[in-house]
Length: 337
Image (cartoon, rainbow, N blue to C red):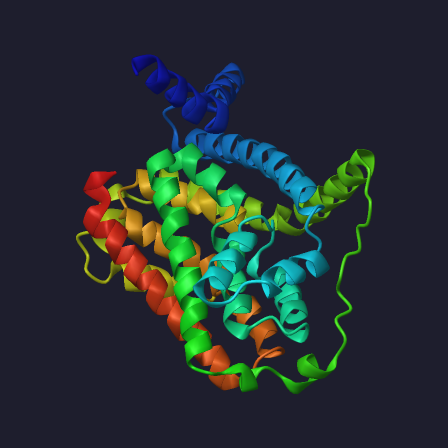
């Protein structure tokens, strides 16, 4: 058992967390005559280390996920979804969201494709909620920072939110709130990948990786930059007072701050990491991340083109309330982690 624990610690901190890289960057800065005690050096070390780490994990994960996804093009996915009914369909929709390396904005075209093909509205929303929140990339990055236990629970509660959020929307009988043009169009966003060879799948995965990298690159840099400032310039007492679990409004505040912003999981992770080490409540941090990735203002604006205001308000309310509940759950139970 002790051997297994040592192996897991090595895997988490050295393989995923790349602590060796952090030490290497620190030694390089010292070699250039920079003091490790200065805030400027600390910020620069955080920025270089986190940027390299995230991009290594990002490229590796997107390639792997895209290779797997090449076996499940949208048309095939819709056929699979159409065979299930009730909660099992919502669960499957949420699980399919975990193998899509997309932010919320990138998931919306697939949501439109599912809706135009007749997939039940609740199932489509289960997919839409889970896709930016609980993909494999989120799990790996959360494990590298917060540990496997927190990452697993985060994925589970994210899937629960996606399943029950989609079921609730279905129960409200709001299928008439889909924009009429979606009901009338023929789905034209299908990616046809018939009989692909392993080489074809590798090329597809490489293309997806490159496109995703270009898209998220600026947001990761912004996120790491903000994280480096929080990590070395904002007093820990301030973070604890405003965003610590002792503040009863910290989860609500973090959710409201996160919603107008836009980033994917890779851009929000550096900020979450810095806040975590400064004493912010775990639930507060996760609520911020979930609000940024699932309810960002750009994605809400894009979604408005596909659904009517009543359904849009319902979606935002359900997901927003769910995120707040999850945040308080983690804050009140973080001592278990």
